[in-house]
Length: 111
Length: 117
Image 1: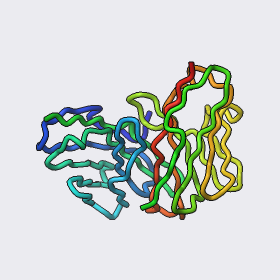
Image 2 (image 1 turned 180 degrees about the vertical axis):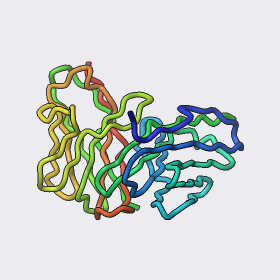
Image 3 (image 1 turned 180 degrees about the horizontal axis):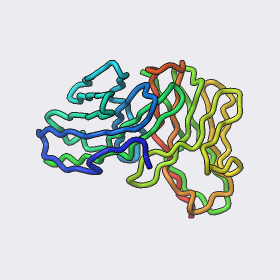
Image 4 (image 1 turned 45 degrees about the vertical axis):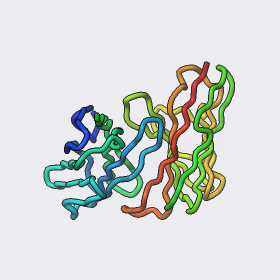
């Protein structure tokens, strides 16, 4: 069983709308959690990185939240744009060496 | 910012031939590089971790003799898919880290689409 579960698997939203992606993890111990954006056929690009003491971090229209007690994180996309269409991957690290990847959420933004 | 360059971006080869993929860190020294494989609509699967000057550490189920990894310098790692077969067709991605600490950035290459005919 994957230690990082993302939901939904995919979603479609209209341009300009907001959406929230979920990431639940069982990785332990916990060091940090990262959100990446991966365009089709490209490598992932970092959006945010948070440690257990951080509850929220923003990067432009992307805002990530973290609840280390419940082992949940979310990524909120505000005022979506067509360029936000991509796969969003949650990555959890127990230490500096290992990374556990979620399967990703595919977001499609339609005009 | 830091950039990881991966080459080639696409390669088509015949079954039985070998293919080499290069991963370069352009403006930082990558003490650790990672190689992943990604199937359509699936997450990245770590294949191996390589540290400069030492042998790569392979994940369980990854054949060392099939996927040869060389990390001869702090800016270059290569993955060679030997005797490729159609089932090796996939998207291969590398990533690199500089200083190893919890918030050190992990930079990804843009991937290589390998098609074995």
